[in-house]
Every structure is written in C-alpha cells, then in structure tokens.
Image 1 (cartoon, rainbow, N blue to C red):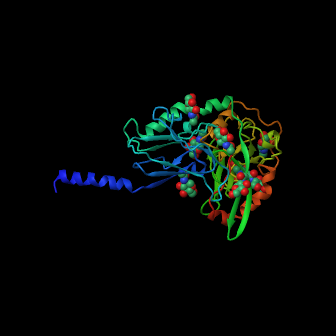
Image 2 (cartoon, rainbow, N blue to C red):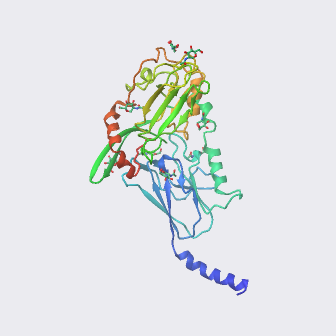
Image 3 (tube, protein in one colour):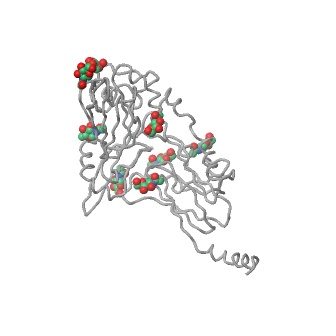
Amino acid sequence: MTFATLFASVVALLPAAALAQTTFSVQVGPNGTLTYDPPFITANAGDLVRFTFNPKNHTVTQSSFDAPCVPLAGGATSGFHFISNVSGLLDTWEFAIPASSTPFWFHCEQTQPVSHCGKGMVFAINAPADPDPHSFDAFQKLAMQLNGTGDSTSQSASAPPSSSWATATATITHDGSTWTSVYTSYDGTPSPTYSPDGPVNHVIKVGADGLNYTPSNISAAIGDTVTFEFHPKNHTVTQSSFLQPCKALAETSTTGQVGFKSGFKFVDANETNFPTFQITINDTAPIWGYCGQTGHCQSGMVFSINAVEAGKNNFAAFKALAMAGAPSSNSPSGSNSAGAPNPSTGAAVANNRLSYAIVLGAVGAVAALL
Ligand SMILES: *[C@@H]1O[C@H](CO)[C@@H](O)[C@H](O)[C@H]1NC(C)=O
Ligand SMILES: *[C@@H]1O[C@H](CO)[C@@H](O)[C@H](O)[C@H]1NC(C)=O
Ligand SMILES: *[C@@H]1O[C@H](CO)[C@@H](O)[C@H](O)[C@H]1NC(C)=O
Ligand SMILES: *[C@@H]1O[C@H](CO)[C@@H](O)[C@H](O)[C@H]1NC(C)=O
Ligand SMILES: *[C@@H]1O[C@H](CO)[C@@H](O)[C@H](O)[C@H]1NC(C)=O
Ligand SMILES: *[C@@H]1O[C@H](CO)[C@@H](O)[C@H](O)[C@H]1NC(C)=O
Ligand SMILES: *[C@@H]1O[C@H](CO)[C@@H](O)[C@H](O)[C@H]1NC(C)=O
Ligand SMILES: *[C@@H]1O[C@H](CO)[C@@H](O)[C@H](O)[C@H]1NC(C)=O
C-alpha cells in the first residue's frame, strides 16, 4: 500500500468514526475545589460532555479565549447549579459538541465570594497543545490575570472579608441505617470525609523553630487529631478567629464559641520530654490560632488548620493581619478550656465519630455556602 492509498483509506474511515459518539464525564467543583476535572478534553463533533455538579454553586458557561470569564454572546450555559449536599444526587448538564473542530472555552460564572474563573476554574475542549499561545494553560492564565484578585495578602490585611459560615446537614445511609450529621462548613473547605486509612495524628511543633508553629498551616480531615508539641520556652496554643488573629475566640465570638486553649506551657531549655496539647477535628471549618505570649502573635506566631488557601481568607492573609498589629487579648489566655466551634455541633459531632466506618464507604457529603 502506498502512502497515498493509506491516507485515502484513513480519510474514508473518519466519518464512520465520528458517528461513534463518546460521552465524556467532567466533575464540576469536585471535593470543594474550584476546578473542572479533567480541565480539558479532546473530542469530536457529535460527542457529549456530561458535567456533574458537586456541592456549592457553579456554572459551566461558554466564553471565548480572549475573554475567559465573560459569557459568550449566544453561547451555551448550564446556569447556576446550587448543590447543597450530596447523597448520591448530583445535578448534571450536557453539552453536545457541534459539527465544528474549533476549540470551545468554558468558565464558572460564580463571583461570590471570589471569582471562580479568576481562581482558574475554566475548561476547554480541543484546545491546541502547549506551546501554542491558545493552549489550555494560556487560557487559564489569562482568566486568572483578568479576573483574579491579584495579591490577596495585602488586600486582606487592610480590609479582610468576613467569613460566610453555614451549618450543613449530611445524611449517610448504610446497611439500612441512616445517620444525620451536622457540622459547620465553609466555602472551599474539604469534604467532611475521614482520612481514608483512619484518623491521622498531625504534629505541630510550638516554638521549635523560632517564634513559629511548624508546620503552620495544615489540612486535617474530620476525626483526625492535631497534637501540639511545646518546645522552649513559654508558649500557648489559643484558638482565635480570622478577623482577630491575636484574641482568644471566647472574647470575640458573637455566638458563644469558647475555642480551645492550652494555657502557658513553660519548657526548660534542656527539656527533652515536650509537653503536648491535643485537639480533635470535628468539622471542615477553618481553625485559626496563635500564641498568647506577649508579642508572639504580633511577630507572626500563628497557625491555621483547613484554611481555604484558594480564597482571600488564606493563611498568609491571616498571618499578615496578625503582624499588622491586630489588638491582642487583654486577659491572659492561660486557663485550660476547650469548646466546640459551634454549640449546635456538639451532639452531631458525636454522630460523625460514630459513623466513622459508614462515612468511609459513603460519598463525601457537604453543604457549603457561597
Ligand atoms: C477527590 O477526592 C477523591 C478521594 O479523596 C480523590 O480520589 C480524587 O482524586 C479527588 N479529586 C480531585 C479533583 O481532587
Ligand atoms: C448561586 O449563585 C448565584 C450567583 O451568585 C446566586 O444568584 C444564587 O442565589 C445562588 N443560589 C443559591 C441557591 O444560593
Ligand atoms: C470577569 O471580569 C469581567 C470584567 O470585569 C466581568 O464582566 C465578569 O463578570 C467577570 N467574571 C467572573 C466570573 O469573575
Ligand atoms: C440534603 O438532602 C436531603 C435529600 O437528599 C434533604 O432532605 C436535606 O434537606 C438536604 N439538606 C440540606 C442542608 O440541604
Ligand atoms: C509563662 O508566661 C506567662 C505569661 O507571660 C507568665 O505569666 C508565666 O509566669 C510564665 N511561666 C514561667 C514558668 O515563666
Ligand atoms: C536543665 O539544666 C539546668 C542547669 O543547666 C538544671 O539545673 C536543670 O535541672 C535542668 N533541667 C532538666 C529538666 O534537666
Ligand atoms: C503553608 O504551608 C506550606 C507547606 O508547609 C508552606 O510551604 C507555606 O509557606 C505555608 N504558607 C505560609 C503563608 O506560611
Ligand atoms: C471537638 O468536639 C469536642 C467534643 O465536643 C470538643 O471538646 C473539642 O474542643 C472539639 N474540637 C475543636 C477543635 O473545637
């Protein structure tokens, strides 16, 4: 067979191949992320793309390469799909690829509380590969450039946004039994699933590396524990809030939250048996905290657990706020006390723990406010 006839027979086969319709599955905002998974596909005319909407409130909206975050006039859109919780029931929307080989560009129109598109939540069909200037990466970069928030650290330090909290309910059914768990959630936080191999203990060293918690910003799943290990000389682990990094939560909460406090732990310079303080992660809400020793918080000795790094209220913004001279606690944070983040979660937290094995087998369920 010559090249010419080989070419001819391949071309002859093409229309038949195009008739075999393929359905592509794309997850919208899986695991609370501001992403489409996969972020781009290569498809033929007549193929279907089935978008599955995960919890939160997203769209799949056609745009153009040059204006990634602006709906294309006459383009396709799913409209907003608010998914309050999972239970196996996720919305879907389908896009049939028209008879055309040109690229198709999409974005999420949500702008509350941050522009999802500006965070890189874009999708493409048949985008040319890198290094083409119209590649998917180039499209995503342009979205983040045009609709991104830029350096959120400096903006947040002067005018931090307030948090939008929600109490969400997840219903988990397994072996004929149904559990209802209530937990606090927050936009962008992880799904309230347990660590796949059982609870994990995260260790944070206090003051082992200067006036720092190491590591200072961690992610932890529900059921995990965080053990703070106190190094010399005299530090605390005190829960605070994003807006008031250096004040005990008990002093600033308007909803009666008490927050945890280790009290001062004085550790001798030659001590090798470091005292510890442990907390249990009950929900996916971000946890903020600081050292109550005079001046330590203001020098940046703060930590976060499950901060939403994709949003404005990220750890860097929290730390910047602490160092910007946020007022510190008036009363010493030396007493030993601990409290659930939200009084109404107490009973449900127990449910969450009991249903540990059940949650493992269930789809992660979360309701998050926007
Ligand atoms: C979502 O979480 C599941 C389970 O942890 C993981 O297998 C999957 O890769 C995650 N997907 C994304 C897009 O992060
Ligand atoms: C979803 O987001 C849109 C745009 O921000 C908003 O108008 C709509 O009310 C939201 N839906 C729900 C149920 O929160
Ligand atoms: C992106 O920015 C443009 C121009 O300011 C605006 O019209 C559009 O609504 C924004 N889109 C998103 C999703 O942020
Ligand atoms: C979660 O979904 C169930 C039905 O699947 C519904 O009855 C319940 O009200 C939902 N919870 C929230 C907080 O939306
Ligand atoms: C630790 O620091 C606190 C607050 O500054 C102080 O009251 C306490 O006496 C210190 N403990 C020791 C053993 O120095
Ligand atoms: C630490 O060293 C000092 C003197 O160097 C000693 O007096 C003290 O007992 C030591 N403490 C511990 C816990 O070993
Ligand atoms: C958050 O933690 C990561 C990983 O430990 C670290 O690389 C990063 O610098 C931390 N962010 C800030 C603002 O300290
Ligand atoms: C988790 O719940 C327990 C029991 O209600 C409480 O003692 C603990 O302080 C909570 N953990 C956090 C981090 O608030």
